[in-house]
Length: 394
Image 1 (tube, helix red, strand yellow):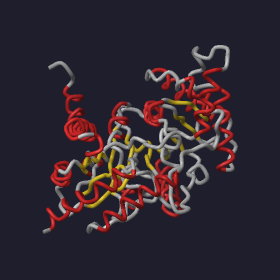
Image 2 (cartoon, rainbow, N blue to C red; image 1 turned 90 degrees about the vertical axis):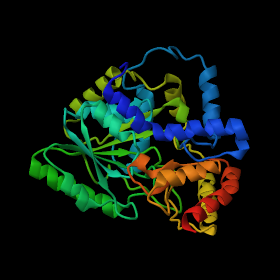
Image 3 (tube, one colour; image 1 turned 30 degrees about the horizontal axis):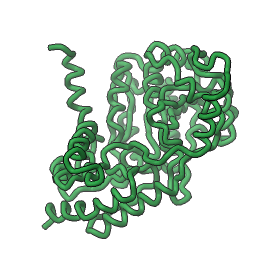
Image 4 (cartoon, rainbow, N blue to C red; image 1 turned 180 degrees about the vertical axis):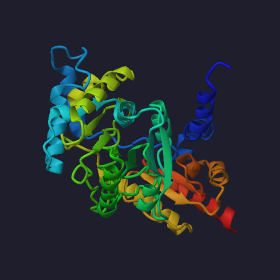
């Protein structure tokens, strides 16, 4: 055998979303790009904001000494200072540049965090449905992940989480707005969660970190606000990126931010910086660091995603689906009329509609629809969604 049994098993487990994407490429070759309705990947389709293009052109044209050389492993101090300044302004807490570490996206940030804090067999608890790669990120650091169900509306079930906390628990990992559900966890449930963590930490005589994966934080609708964990729990670590808010998924630029009052702050920072290097990420891309430092507050047109959400949800409701509009991100987690979400997704695929079965996110009986696609893709797919629903309900 040429690869490890473990990785061979992981390939099968992780391949579902990618397989749907690759199947879509074949369908597009056969039927043409405009005749395949690909909702499989959360790949932003909006252009970056104008400020980004202008800043990029400036940075490329300027004669900056050492523009492409190595930098401190935590990133350029001026970029970190700008991110810290934004955090301080948003949360009313004084962040210094040292509380921010620039990373290769939120995925890189999470891997660095887990490598830093986890000993072998340490446990990380996360609600499901969730992003499938969390399992691999925790495993990369030798830890164990424990999945806990959410309530029927995908809100946090604090009692269920509490039952899973043990002496081996090192962290709780949450993602809000959530991929795949679009759920935004409200302030009340987050305060209940952090109160429980404070109580458990005191009882166990150890700190339980709260890790928040926030690449979709800026993408929310209807005046909804994403509550700040920094303001209610001092042992918070945030992983974020500009992949979605600036439509820069391919540039791999993100950061880790830690609460200034987190336990053992200096040792934690030293560990994060070391792991940023030893994992091979080394630095977030130099060019992107220089660009984002110049455009604080810039983001894509969120109203465009809201329009796509409404177009999809209203269309699906019209052909017979029961739909609860997501509060954020750009995914709809749609309940299927059968528990066999694979069969339902395959039926949609026969109509050249590509979605991802819910089991890829640890929740069967659903499909994920990524609506970060052209409006016409949504409009032209609705009839096929209706035909598939009737196939399973008539």
